[in-house]
Amino acid sequence: MTMKRMVLEIGMGTDIRGTDSTKAAVRALRDALWHNSLTVAHALDLDVDSMQVAVTIGVPQPDQVDKEQVLAVLPHGTGTVEVVEGGLQIPNEAGTDGTIMAHAAAVVYLDVA
Image 1 (cartoon, one colour):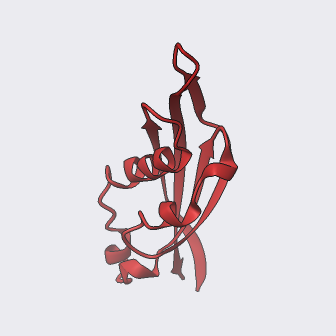
Image 2: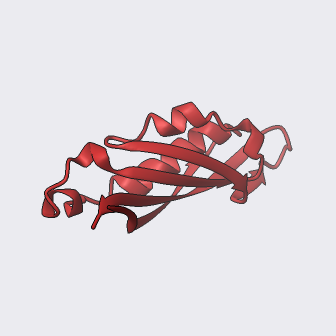
């Protein structure tokens, strides 16, 4: 058996009135996952928990993302998280706060012949 890339899901999340990169990252992954109902594992007669999910998050300050909170979003399977520089930070008019935008890509792999 070989791990095969089966699905690519993408999403966007924000922390509108704060600059919490983890909150934006979690929302981005939820956006990617919650718009889909994957049946590929069932179609291949595989357990949904056999999925391996590689998550990439793009935010302006990657070191501020709690990867464990992002991984906790996955409803099935096991996952890894890589956080890279990306997304967008928009300061408020006073320069005291702002909005963080994060992007997420989730690639689902299954072990198939």
